[in-house]
Image (tube, rainbow, N blue to C red; front, side):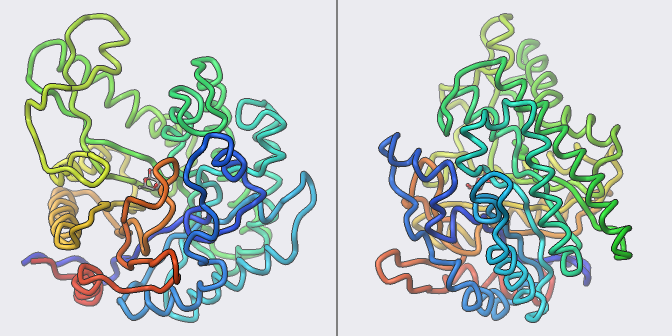
Length: 405
Ligand code: FCB
C-alpha cells in the first residue's frame, strides 16, 4: 500500500462546453453543424444541475474540483459583459466552497466566443488584448473565492488541432497561423498571470496560484536506434518542455498543471525533419491496452513525464488524467496504476500537490461527440440521470484515506 500526504488535493475536472449545455455563443456550436459532427446540445445540463453534481462530488470525498468559465457566456458580444453569467459562476464557485471543495478555475478551455473567432481568433494580434479584458472581468469577480487558476487549457493541443491538422474549428492547416496562435497564447498567459497577481494585490487578497494545463505525452522510442533517440530528444523538448522553459523564464508559473493520458511511440525511418518530428510507430511493435479511442494506456509514462518536470522546482497539479472505456473495471485499474506512478515520482522528489481525474461525469468529447465515456459518474443523455460508477466509489476511498493499494 502507498500513502499520499494529508493535504493532497483529490478530485475531478470538467470544462464548461463539455458539460454545461447550450453554449450557443461559442464557436464550436455553429461548427458542429457546419462540419456535420454530433451536436453538443444540452450536454449534461450541468449549467442547471451543478448543485446536484457537486453534492455527488462531495459524497465521493473530493476536496478539489476543476471547472472552466465559458467566455462566450461572460462576453456574448464584444465588449458586452453579462452580469448574469458572471453571477452564475460566482454561485458555482460558492457552491463548491460551501461543500468544502477547493475550486480550480480554467479561463479558456478550447472554445471562443463566435465574435472572437470572427475577428480572427487567436491568429489576430488583438487576441491577447481581447482575452485579457475578459480575464480582468472574471478575476475581479472571482478573486475573493478562487486561489488556483489555469489560464489556458492545453495550448499545444489547441493550436495543433485547430490550426495545423485542421481537425477543430476554424480548421486551418497553416504552419504560419499555428505559430501566431502559439505566440499569442503564450503572451496571453504571461499577460493574465501578471494581471491576476496585480488584481489580487490591489484587492488585498493573498497571491493566487496561476498556471496553465499542459498536455504532456510520454514520448518514447520504439527502439534505441540513433534516429529514434534524436527524435525523442527533439520532441520532448519541442512538445513537452519548450513552453515550460519559456514560461518559467518569464516567471509566469506558480505551479505546473499537467494533463496526461497516453504514450507517443516514436519510430523514425529517415533523417527528414518532418519524420523526425512526427513519424510514429504504425507497426504495433510494443502493443499496449488501449482506451475506447485507441489511445495507449501507459501508466509508467506519467512518472516519466513528472520526473521531467523536476528541474523546474515547482509544485505540480495533475489537472487531467483519465480513460474512456465501456468497462468500468478498466477505469479503476487506470486510476490505480496511474496513482502508483504519481507516488513513484513523488518519492523521487517531484512535488505533486493534487490529482484531478478526467472527468467527474461523462461529457461531450469534442469532435468524437458523446460515445467516449470518461466519467466517474455516468450520464444518461436521454433522461440526464446521473449514476455513480463503481470506480468512482473506489476512488472515493482513495480521496478519503490517501491510500492506494
Ligand atoms: C483533453 C482535454 C479535455 C478532454 C480530454 C479527454 O485533451 O483537455 O477537454 O477532452 O482530453
